[in-house]
Length: 69
Image: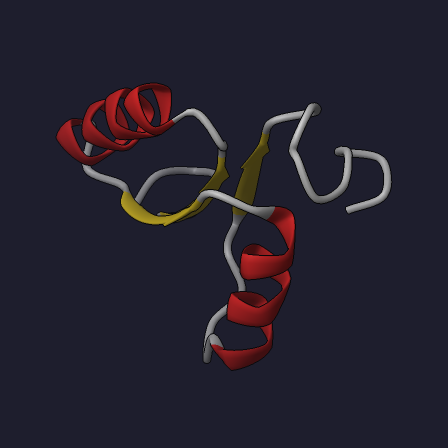
């Protein structure tokens, strides 16, 4: 396990960018939870048994911005 932890949530509405980020993080040995909307991520956070160690958050999302999240 890395110093920061092993679980990263990535919230990105651009599908290709989300796929690229997720792939790179997985290649580096991280577990990744991918979401395309902030509301989706919030709902997912309610159901997770373990909270992510890091959240990679796109600032400009269609349903709310990064500060609102």
